[in-house]
Image (cartoon, rainbow, N blue to C red; front, top):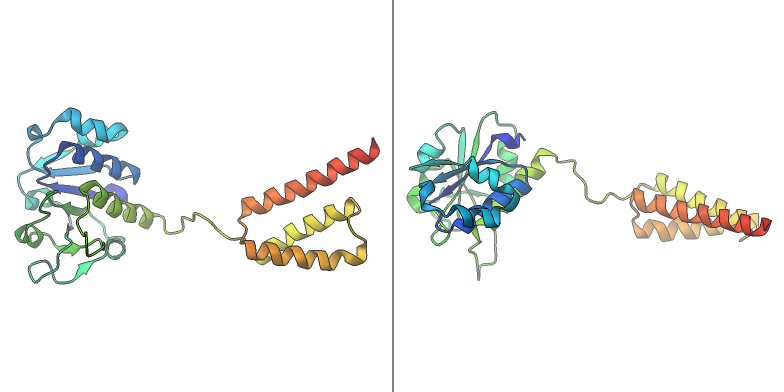
Length: 239
């Protein structure tokens, strides 16, 4: 997934601050191409920058068009975002992750179109897009803030570029055995148990730590703690 090929299109946005917040949402996820259906002079530059903060460069480079067709003319596909379903709304609507998977191998510009804050995209505007995308939300309050919708879509593109990105990875049992051995070795050094008691102690720690689902950094920290403890105990004996 080449994020440089992703183009966010805001159709008829009304509030300058929402445009700024959308810029920030894009920057959070490494997407920098913004197109707006509307006129630049209709927006308050200062109010855009207040919420864009350090993403003001996206606003500065934004392109302006008179229609969705013009804003997406050089793209190979355009996805209109909508919370409503119907025969004039593409019938089948992709979920964000489904759309990202659908286009991840595409070679060309990909446009995602967001409608006006109050009304969203009209039937005609959705019809002018290649496909439809919907973001599921509670039926009692389905309308999303514009920048929030942009954030969700951009986040899925960001994750699609690196599917191997991990937030927390549990170590395997073979790696856990190294930590258990470190604990047992150091407990033995300080005379915590006789050699005959070591297997029971190892089984105890193996069960506890396996249930704890340790990460690599946590395993290393535990090893460091027991190693340092044994070293301090040895120095105290020498003194």
